[in-house]
Length: 319
Ligand SMILES: [Zn+2]
Image (cartoon, rainbow, N blue to C red; front, side, top):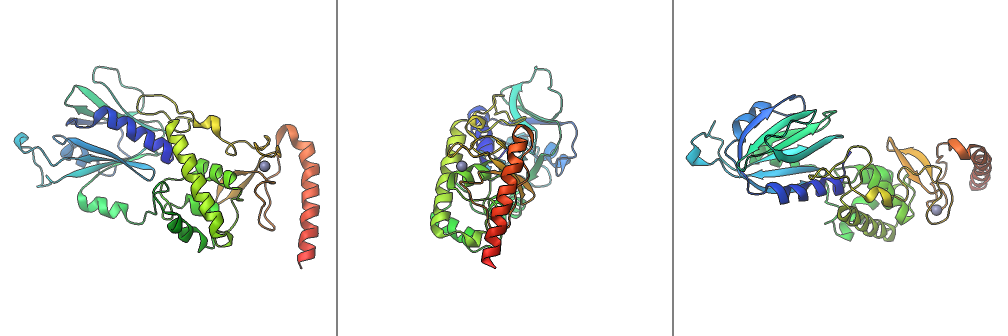
């Protein structure tokens, strides 16, 4: 699923491409991922796209008040409004010449005043599109945590260190921080040498400060490289991102750690596959990684037995 850097990449592309354009008409395909399809058809035409913002993992297209000369004001809803676009797993949004044949799975076409169409395609339709008035937007945005690129180091530590939840779960929790997902959580925990299963409350404030710093650096670098393309992600020009080449933990199970060469391990934390170096990121007591599969299987089994023995001894001592 696109995370902060991928969504920021798409938002920047759209800003370049469609800012200031007016929507002339809307044509819809399948609508099961749209909150109120009729509202799109009724309320978008006549509005100018005045800003494209990223909020967490979704985008907000800020729309002007209805153009009064067009005289198509409906339901008295002429005030400025927003279009929320969440790309889900496979959503893509980009402008195309109106004459260009539709890609498969194109479900929203917005004809713009320069003759192009802003098209949304989504093979799996896990995305979401919603037309929001000022009031419904305010409701939509309550409950989100801080933006990880803007959060101060004290606020970040406050949001993490007081919580008896696993740090990986806290990073993924959009009410703690908005925009971080599985990839950038694992990458930043590896960089900060913090095991994903540690409890927030067991981290020192110094560790929280380090985590914030490396998370911000990783997100900024990923934005520069236009995000990570794991399966389907393409930016607003239809180009894949390049940050996947810089992954140090995510998806690297069994491969050597970039710092110490120990095979990267995987465990399920917060219901998600989590990749970490068992040496650089010591696990909390009693927490087990999944057995390593594949080529290194035999070596790994022996290593597992050693680890289990070590942990038995450690636990024995501590009791
Ligand atoms: Zn390591």
